[in-house]
Image 1 (cartoon, rainbow, N blue to C red):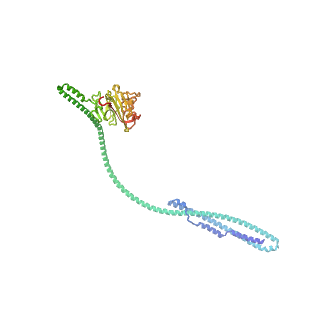
Image 2 (cartoon, one colour):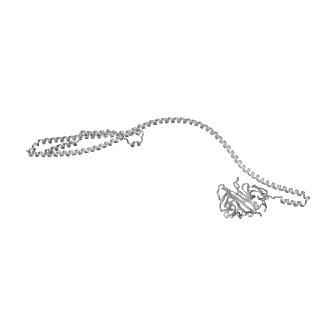
Image 3 (tube, rainbow, N blue to C red):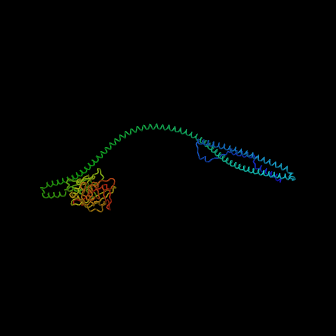
Length: 553
């Protein structure tokens, strides 16, 4: 039993010694922590490349990082000192426990040696019991020391875990410090680069300033040249303005002269028309005078020979007179037999018109048409808004626009010879159509110039817009003879006189239109095509008559 206890004592002492770290190990652990604080490696924070900082920002970031590093170093120093103090206390306590165990082991060993012989001889039983009791007490003490040692070991393990956690924290702090140091190094490099760039920018700025000064000098020189040129231009402009004023005055004088010439042109044109009319009249009168002279010469010859030939002269005179004498022209058809074929103004002498009347004659294919109504664009434009008297006597100019007169129209057509009617119309688009009627006549004023019209030629290109007016009496602004119960058709359709019913499909005396707006108050023809209604606005229209046979029928 004693040997067992001795062996157990030595084993326990070795176990305790093996689980208690030495001071050198603690010092090595402390040095390891200290070495971790002083370890430096170069790393790169990729997030720093995303920000381009200016020099003031770089310096401010450097100051902030330096302050943060100083705070971190201070914290690490405090933590290291605390940990070193704790290790020293733990080392001292461990040494004390170790010394106590060694003392107990030594005392147990001495005690066992002192009582070894007594135990072997078994001489003293009481001593053995006491020794047994002491051994039990010693075992109990050893168990207590073992329990205490176990607690100390657990405490050391917990402290070791705490040290490991603190070591991890220190490692993380070290990494953060390293990243910040890398950032500081990066910022320093960027600061150096920015400094160099600033130096380059300053140099470039000086170059730009010098270039701007040179350009300014050149610009000032150009401004001086432009100012001089502007002054010359101003002088030239004033001269030009003076010239322009003179030209404006000259232009005004030319305009006045043009207006005067234009006004005189109408007078000259009227004079020319009068000259033509008088020339035609003179030609007709010369022809008639030559005929009279011939008759007079024949009469003289007959008188000279009367005494010699007697009755024979009288018969000859009667025969010659009937064959050679010519009567005045009744209409344009009479001029065809006289060899005339150029259209123009001629003097005719209808029945009951001893003074004669000027008309426009159209010669075409050996036929002569007597125009009694002409409408066209003409300067000056003839006014067809007239009273009954004007339409009775006639008005206008045969070379332009005119109305022959209802009395002359009656004297021309109301006799045994039949007259046919022809109408030539032109639209604003330039389309020209013509239509013919085989019978046309106008009665006298007592019958209110009643219109008689029939036998429309079906081969005509122009539609029959006059059938609606057949049998109607004439109406003017001041003399209403139409069949419209709501008013005066002449007043309603623009003022021109016509053979209205209610009112008319043709408006040849209405005002001319220049804009193509067909309505009830402009010159228009409501059946422009024989195939059916096709109302159009007209730019020109002519009404003309012709005898059904040549010569006197």
